[in-house]
Image (cartoon, rainbow, N blue to C red; front, side, top):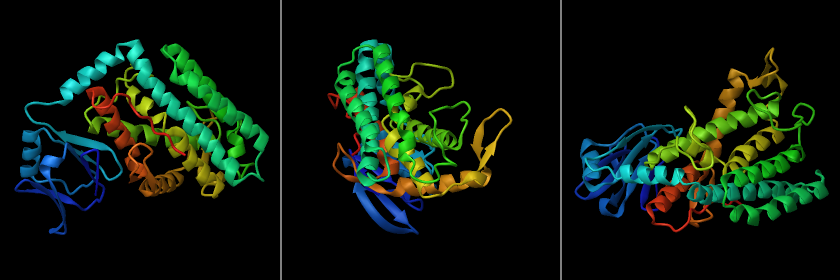
Length: 343
């Protein structure tokens, strides 16, 4: 259990929440594990199947405290709402900003800034840790290119120009992605990013990781009351969680890409773990997907120091914290949305 931004995150799968007077009580095996004054909380987000008492749900609804339920893996399940739902005002603000190209560009720009910043540091880490095994000059040139783009992204005022710079940055990053693959280079040759369908094992792993990350980001946004289908950088399209795709941009290099590189470099997967279809599409076998999912969940339990809050959190909570920060910015509590800048 952890309190961040006046929100109680319940990450233990066996915690049952109840109400005792003016306190929310966390119970494990019918014994009290912790308690928190209800008036100090603005939200409760639980990843436990054990649930919460009707009394607590009623108290949260009366006081306007968000109570959200997710599965232990992070899938959004439900949210408790009272008669007066503050999420209506939040979503109306979100829709107004999404319809304003200038305001959309300002928020989208911070997310793209985070993506390019994190992509650069993903390369810098490999260059620092494995200088004798990579083309340092080539990686340094790409890092310099990405660094030079950051002021331009920060000052962008048009969405099309911002999307163009994001595309240039992504192309530069993936042009050296093969250098970040340190083992199994014959089996995991990377010639460039491709999708729908992925045509090689590396792209198959990346696509699967991005799919999981997008679901995590969508759940995070829904948990704080935002509409995951209405984005700022990615525009509306039926069936597409556009805001989830916006939010995940910052996390692609530092969560998904680093995870895939770790799996490849540690020889977690090999040639028999992939299926090649007649159309050329490459996908993971069922057993390989189970291994991938297990290690993905393990990765989400590892901790980091959040760059904006300065507090240690599990990687799995990072999208939820960013969703909270975005909601607070839209409500006017934060002047700007602080992107996730990993280093």
